Length: 454
Image (cartoon, rainbow, N blue to C red; front, side, top):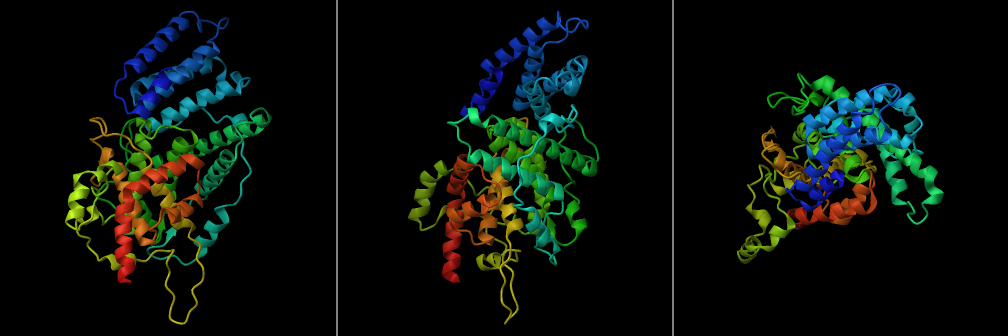
């Protein structure tokens, strides 16, 4: 009930936590009462019901950002599991129980920026068939001569995870909800694939923490490099490596689209911070942050007020109110990207695979889907001037710039490119529709003027 209340509050954008707190405290009270009897000796071990209750409690507290309580309850859950013989040997008779506890571990680890507490559970880790949607294409692109402005993804593990995410999304898109009984084995396989994908993502994030963090506490901002230093990717060559950024974006997509977590949940805070930190350097090297300003995007509802009326009366569009670009429109469009290579005179232009460029669009789209509201607790975080409560505008601005750079002036074109990566049916369609309403005025205004000039 507490978890339902937490999700309802997020979806309804309510700040009243009375119902949520009531169910949380009732859960703690009931668990403590049972622990006065259970777990005292080997003859009366901790029951499955108590384990599930504590696991759900960790989920709730991770979801709402109460990380100190979640940490205490996660450690308590770990001790109770150890008393039962461990999650693999002691609880192997119940995959449902194992999944519930594993999800609590994932929830706390990603929300608190901590390593996983529990070991890998082999019997939960299966994989759907992979389609080689990305691996071969990415390898071919990486073998080409790469220069400044080119994109690359050097980490093969994240490409494998993207293959798995595509298989998961492909299955869900085609799932027949009217025939549940005959699809039990397939649903179990999807659950196993989700478990495996998130395990691998958590391991990759732990590698990044140990590689780039100079010091870490459970709640410290995950800045991969400080404001006065260069991005680690600059030491890897002239091409822009999207590997680290794709790790965080894939994890966010898994939570938002696949697991169905509301975009406004505070549990996404650390992943969003990590995505901003890892993405800032690549976007700067691609010159996708210079224009427009981070304050030029508003909710679609704000475009129906006096600002739009006054702008229309004066012959100006809302996009004209932004600061002047350091380059002209046509200079911006002429910027080099790997998807728009120029050939020498007389040399035929060969088709180029836009995979890495489309993945960058997908990363920015995923970041735009998160809508964590600003609070006094997250407003203190800042990375290169990007305040946590303002992070969505960071992604929106970069996405609009990327669309301009690639001459994407219609939502259908953007939809096709995003769908060529990983796409989860109606959820992604709705998110894209909402995002496009916000960036369309700037993109269309820019596109029409550029095409007229060209």
